[in-house]
Length: 142
Image 1 (cartoon, rainbow, N blue to C red):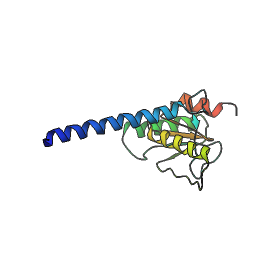
Image 2: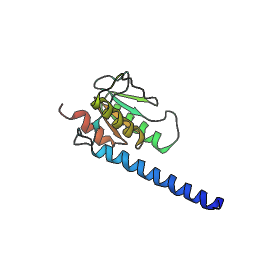
Image 3: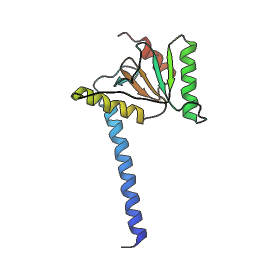
Image 4: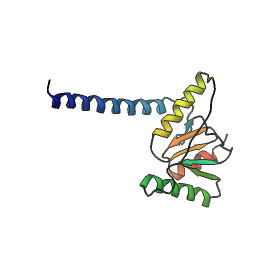
């Protein structure tokens, strides 16, 4: 078998895996049992999260379009009087997670792997939400 053929097969397999894993993340987000009208799903919150504070995760001081979108989202929330915390680091701790905690962690990874920014609020999260979606989540009855 020629080297070109082996590289072609490896490339096809790699592309197939990438497409499959992206599909798996999307399916996980859609299959979430707890979802809000604005599309937020039940997730594991980051360490240090405070109730009532929107957490926006994206690279800080980065010129990328995604980071600028995160900055604009955080600024828009602040202008509306909504408490917001902007960060580029996410961490959470769980020891001996039960089935629901494992599911929440999987949904959290899916949100963090989705579009930037990743937004978390009171146990719910969404990848790349609009300002209107975040405001709707904040103002939704609990």
